[in-house]
Image 1 (cartoon, rainbow, N blue to C red):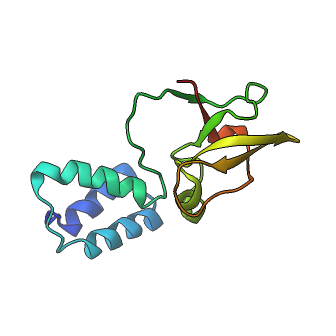
Image 2 (image 1 turned 90 degrees about the vertical axis):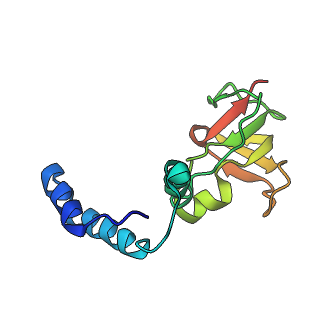
Amino acid sequence: MSKISNEWVRDQFTRSKIRVDVGMGVLDLLELTRDVEIPDNISEEVYEVFSKVSRGIALVEESDQTWVEAVRGELSVNDVVRVKVDGYTGQQGVIHNGRVGKIVAIRSGDIIVTSTDGRMPELIGTHYQPNVLEKRIS
């Protein structure tokens, strides 16, 4: 990473009124990555991908499939759904975000899904709320 001075960073925090705990976290990350060399031509993409995966946000391959927000009452058994890339945070996000499966049941508002994406761990009969799902329409 570039050799950004801590003084400049602290000045930025002061000017934008960044909370102290947030600033300390950023300074810690900068210190940990100070000796990492990232070529300029890929640095923007590296930062973007790191920002997502470090928060458990899934990276999904672009495809010709169309996904729309899942809406309670508009979902049916056998519909193909995907957990939103940012449906969960932390370890839950690592396990669930971006996973694709088929609705096997709908009970008491829960959408029950079994994964079909071939990834591990296989998710069998996992309960989701519609607000964390997307439905495939093509």
